[in-house]
Length: 216
Ligand code: DX5
Ligand code: ZN
Image (cartoon, rainbow, N blue to C red; front, side, top):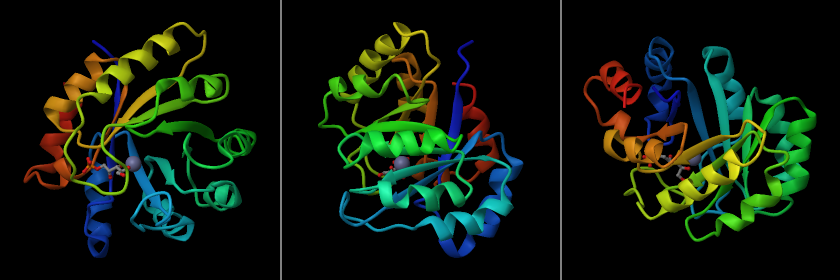
């Protein structure tokens, strides 16, 4: 059976009810919490920053996976390291991607690159020596609850082949529009980390749905 992990994106959750949301997350088999940071420039939405994440940190034992949808992440890397992140990912389409990755890596945290739907997999190659994770956006970044883009599975498969040819452990993550069906196709295409947002918050039985996501 393929080993993979499942994380929850809290972007679509009710921020006024986060105490209950985290109580559910902590009791569940979820492996990580995915935190979407949006600057209103790289994407046309604004979410939250390092202080918000720092406030959440003491209330969760889960891995914090911070996704920076930020045009120039470099000036903010230290603040996100201090916020209690375990993994920080930056976009290949952003500025100072390599400098940001090196800074994250030097701090001892895990680092990763993210590619948008319109970006070629070739753009990932030069980062494969340093990253711990590659994330393929399976929706256009900026909002939760969007429809999964199945054409991105070809990129997942391409990148999984690139990773296999290397002698390095690199996780392959997908983000956007994941549910039981699309999650299964992403795993079949070579992914081993799934981010799930709106689909999970729309379910009446949170814990049961997490278990189903973990047995795809
Ligand atoms: C979108 C974010 C995703 C999103 C996932 O820009 O990067 O993490 O919140 O949520 P769903 O599963 O609702 O697409
Ligand atoms: Zn995300």
